[in-house]
Image (cartoon, rainbow, N blue to C red; front, side, top):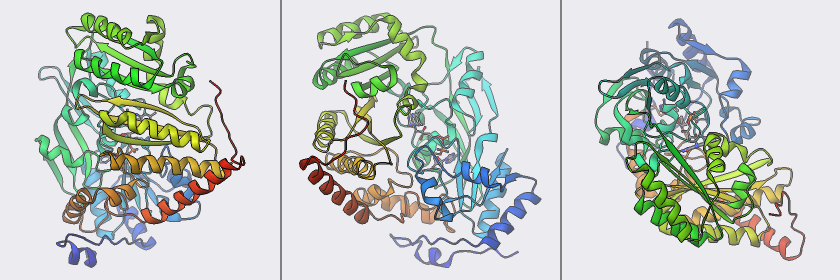
Amino acid sequence: MSTKTNKEIDIHAKSSKPKFKLSRKLSDIEKSYTKIKEEGIAFSRTLSERISSSGDTTGTPFYHFRWKRHFLADYIAYPKSDEDVIKIIQSANEYIVSVTPRGAGSCYYGSGSPTNGGVVVDMKRMKECQINKDNMTATVQTGICFSNLMDLLDEKDLELGCYPTSALTTTLGGWIGTGGTMGIGTVQNGPFLNQMVSMKVVSPTGNLKQYNEKDDFEQFFGSNGIFGIVTEVVLKIFPKSTKTDPIMAGFSSLGDLLKAIQVILSNTNPFVLRFSDKYHEYNCSGLTRHSHYMFLLYNGRNKDLDTDVKEALKLIEQNNGTFLGTKFSHDTWEDYLKHELKIKLETPVQMLQQIYIGFQKTELILNYFEKLIKKNKLNHCFYGLINRDNNVRLCLYTPTDNEYWMHFLSSKAVISRVVKYSYKLGGRIYTYGLQNTIYLHKFEKDKLKKFREKKAEVDPNYILNPLKIVKSKISFFRINMMFELIMFYRRIATKLGLAKEILVLNI
Ligand SMILES: Cc1cc2nc3c(=O)[nH]c(=O)nc-3n(C[C@H](O)[C@H](O)[C@H](O)COP(=O)(O)OP(=O)(O)OC[C@H]3O[C@@H](n4cnc5c(N)ncnc54)[C@H](O)[C@@H]3O)c2cc1C
């Protein structure tokens, strides 16, 4: 049995700029799934499975693979154990077949989409869970979906320290892959990384490793699975909060909202702090009265719950905010996990970019975003989350419709301008994935260098999640040029009164 290696990678592996070369031979792919079949691991080659396992929430990969077959998986493997994952990776190394780990596919920016065909490793059958109440940990396979794990914990009056808003679908492995930095509970308990006790990872060469230190866990968070497939984690768990108190408040200006956030965070300990504008809330719950909104949740793990709630209400009032009532606040929390999807109901394309930046820069970014939108007669809305370290995840949307190509492309271009401005102010992209890797390459060269060196070291055959993070087929120069041209075109059209306005919300 001869094991192929990619010579070019070996040659450059020691240099600071390794070359990551892709190979894709259909005969090798066939040999690899024949081997998977012989090993008794479930797999599928049906077109419907290949299509449904190759996209994510952005839809761009679907758009691509209509013409370019390498964005479509050649087959899907369904491991149930660490041993299955090891065998899949070993066979992929033997025949040089690209491997894309996949959770629920609920990420954005093509993070979990294949870029060179090969095998998609669907982790969702790896969902075993053992709860240990004595040492308050749960040992969990990473293909389990957050809400299923939360239900199992709930039965024993336990809960997690944090989880993403996409908990209804997202898997533990997927949230690790995209960083797990901000979601529900992270403002109180820090990122998902802080909840780890230990991790098991199958390396890109097929070796199972166990990690017990935070410094070692870190490399896998936000790496899009390029350094290994995380198969099992031991997590901290907590006694279930006996009480939760949600607060929904409206503000008449961005300035008042931001002042309120600052004092509330300094004086109380919320489990959730989300802020948004009226376009976002209108789409989620029909609100129109205020220009900006804040949602807070206090939970029973906080010993000063009642004092904190009173303090928050006082601070909201002092900053010209209005509490929208207990019933509305509870209804908002009840519906919270569906919110982000609701804003897609009325909009054909809900273009989204996520910026990770210091709270102090939030006002600058949002004002710049709004100015560009107004100037170009486009649509927008946003929401943001904040963590204790004063960093925010700003989710900026430009609702559009791809039937109107100029509106569609301008909406993309505006967001790209905001990304460039954010980098100028010291921010960065929240999730790199496939499409956003260009910004990492352009603006974060030191970080990229480290990613590349590590990748060359751990994945000599460059098989695990290729064309994410370390290499990109898309060029920043080309994309930027296209966006700048379209912005120019849109500006002229706007000045001449020819720019078509669509999906306008008169609220
Ligand atoms: C409605 C909605 C709400 C959201 N809310 C949040 C939020 O609050 N916070 C937030 O951060 N994001 C949020 N997101 C983004 C998204 O949910 C996250 O990116 C999520 O982590 C994706 O998980 P997944 O299981 O769907 O993984 P996938 O989308 O399948 O994969 C994500 C990445 O992880 C890799 N991967 C998957 N499994 C593994 C594994 N076992 N080992 C190694 N790598 C792996 C994949 O290759 C891919 O690069 C939201 C998305 C939606 C649609």
